[in-house]
Every structure is written in structure tokens, then in C-alpha cells.
Amino acid sequence: MIRIILAYAAALAAIAVLLRLVVVVPEQRAYVVEFLGKYRRTLGSGLHVLVPFLERIAYRHQLKEDVIDVEPQVCITSDNVQVTVDGILYYKIFDPVLASYGIDDYRFATVQLAKTTMRSEIGKIELDRSFAEREVINDNIVRAVDEATDPWGIKVTRYEVRSITPSEVITEAMERQMRAEREKRAEILASEGVKESRINVSKGEREEAINISMGERTRTINQAEGKAAAIGAVSRATAEGLGLVAEALASPGGSSAMTLRLAEQYVERLGQILGQAKTRIMPERLAELQGLAELVGLVPAGAGRPEPAPERAPAPEAERELVRARREGGRP
Image (cartoon, rainbow, N blue to C red; front, side, top):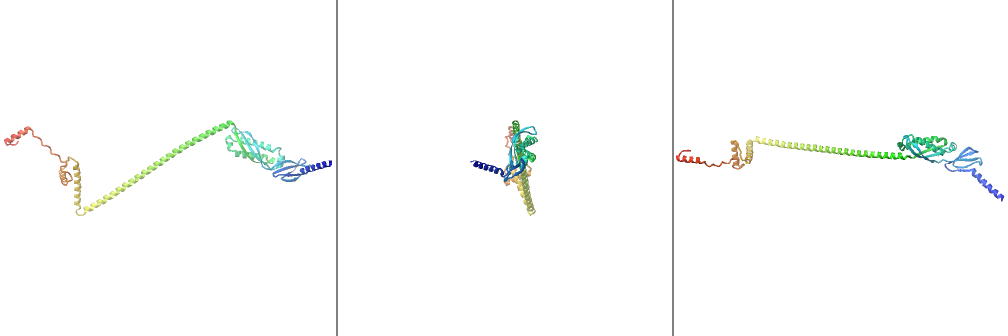
């Protein structure tokens, strides 16, 4: 019985020694081994054998990129405004030995360094700029923290400002400012619209006036050209007529025919004038022409001649004188 117990004890001791002797390191992990309390070596991924009871694994590190949540903290901007800022820090271990012996708690130290750097960067800018310059803040924090953590074997890859929250009073003031700015932009846009509308109307009226004037100019030019063409045609026809008249006058008997034609026109026109008037006073020759017009039939007979005055009844004394003269056989 005692032998069986001793056998089991020996087996357990062998298993314990084997576990301490053989170590399997996973991928992206690093184990720091100490020999009698002093750094001996760093184990990478794979199977490793340790010296029992003399070597031990002092630190186990993860080489993959890790993230640390930076707690919110109150910062003061350059224009003395309190804001609450929080962020996220990304890092990875590039030297397990420095991470083990360079600092006691590299995570805590990295977070504190990120907080202080963030307060410093926020204090350099104004509140309005802090929302627009997050990329600048992130780059400055990464650069400062990465330089400070090099002795610890830590590589800071990224830092992101998650939120910048002003106080309630500042938030209300910012909302009022934004509302006023929006109203201002709305009024400016409305005025710009009215301005553009008036400009467009004035341009339209100007174009309309130009088009009307161009139309009037074209119409006047066309009318002038038409009148000029008409005058030219009339003048050419008159010239041709005068040429024909001159040729007719130059031919035998042309002068007599022209005189007769003029006399006919004269008599015809005179007849029209005498036919429209009741009383006419004219020279003797024109009176002869009137008789000629009546004879030809251009003027009705007796047109324009004064009517004969009615005979008056003789007075009684004149009648007695007339009777006495007759008796006596003398003249009155």
C-alpha cells in the first residue's frame, strides 16, 4: 500500500517537473525567463525546455497591438473654456525585456502620459478650433507619447480623440451662436437672392430695350429703303415718261397734239371748278372758255351765271308821267 502511494507521488512529481521543464509559447506571445532571479532569455512562440527549479517564467507579454481606453478628463482651452475630453490609445510591445524591466506598469504609465499630453495639446488651441483640428491633436499626442515610451519598449501607433464635450453653459452659448450664424446666413442668402433677382430683371429689361431698339432700327431702315426704292422707281418712271413726251414733241405734229391735250385738261379741270361753284367772276377770255365748256358738255348750261333780277312794278307817279307823255306824243 505504501509502495502504491509512493509510486503515485513519484508520478505526480514527475509530471510537475515535466510541466516546469517544457514550455509551449503561443503565437504573438513572448515569455521572459529568469535564472535564479536574473534575466536569462526571452522565449518566442514554440516549444522550449527550461532548467527545473533554476529557471522560471517571470513575465508573459502579448506582442499584438492592444488598445487602452483613456478615461474622460477636464481640459482647459486657450480661451479658458472647460471641456471634457476622452480618447483611445493603440500600442504594441516591441521589446519584452524593456517592457518587463523598464517600468513597473507600462499600461498605467502610458495612459497617464497620454492624459497629460492631451491636456497640454487642448490648452494650446481655442474651443472653436479644437473640433476642427482633431487630426492635429491626435498626431501631436502620438508623437509625444511614442517618444516617452521608447525606453519602456512600447510603440504607440495611434491615438484618437473620441469626444470633446464642453460644459452645459458653453454648449448653450454655442447653440445660440450657431442659431444666430444660421439666421445671418439665411438673411444673407435671402438678400443675395433678391439681388440676383433684381439683376436678372434689370438685365432682362435691358435686353428687351436693346431688342426693341434694334427692331425699331431695322424697321426704320426697311421703311427708308422702301421709300427710297419707291422714290427711285417713281423718278425712273417719270424720267421715262418725260423721255417719251420729249420724243413725241420732237415728232411731226407732236407740238399741236400736246397743245390740244393741255387745252382739254385745262377745260376739263375748269369745268369741274365751275360746276362746283354758283357764282364766278373771271376775265372775258375765261368767260369764253366757260361757254366753250358748256358747248362741249363739261358744264351744265347756265351753271355759275347770275339769275336775272325780277322786274319791278312801276311807281304811280312814273306811271302818270308815262301816260301824260303818251298823250302829248312826247318822250318822258
